[in-house]
Image (cartoon, rainbow, N blue to C red):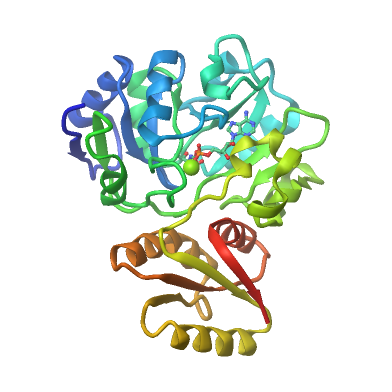
Length: 334
Ligand code: TXA
Ligand code: MG
């Protein structure tokens, strides 16, 4: 493929000429990377199986890992699913547009390439105005995973996307840094009980206050290397070690004072070849927003290890710890 065209868009509203150009590329079966409020997405026309296959090729993503379909209106959802249960409708009203992905039973309109052959489809209406303008200008639902090479940390800036995918995709819309920094919350509403498959900026507490008890998938709190197995079949993406920089990520958790001491000792033993990510004293929003950027920056510096201070799992902490665990080669409890 020829060079990736970068379109810089800073306008908050409306379909500018650049957004129309990118929308045209999507409509004609090309790949367009674009900012969302969570991370950058790599979009293709969700109804065009040839276009969708290009996503898997560009990312080197295994075909058994299904994609999220992005919409710009609730009406679009009804073409993609068999029906919307009342509780799912409640979630859409409360959290859309925003960082929440809802898994529902799929309709025939969705090609199996998108859902990896599952009977369900994941849908989300992103809150970023550029993303919304792009999807509505294209007039089609847009399948989009995070715009990184498979296994790498999700991109939070245009340069991260180019580092991974330059020359492999047609267009990149550069909309600056993404606000949230970690991927959307994924909740499965296709069965009797709602199941949290991936924690994110819409927290478990917020979900439960909207619709009552939500089951947390056992893999959410686990280090995937060890206990993936069959438990992962409901959301295949969860089976993979993920978000991993080249440097070895070491998570240190336990009582604050001991953690600090241990991190100091580890960093000293690494003689300046380790980057330490401190979380103490920072807000969880700030930690989430910077996490993947710090991973990528450590790699650019050629760090051998990234030592991360664990945080508690309340609120957004569940999502942050989920991402760190999935990136971690080693977990040290003190
Ligand atoms: O914030 C986000 O969600 C970003 C932006 C671009 O919207 N997208 C994103 O996509 O993170 P991706 O492909 O990197 O992660 C999608 C996750 C995977 O873990 C996948 O297994 C799960 O959603 N998923 C997709 N379809 C599913 C389905 N039908 N059932 C269960 N899980 C599904
Ligand atoms: Mg991803």
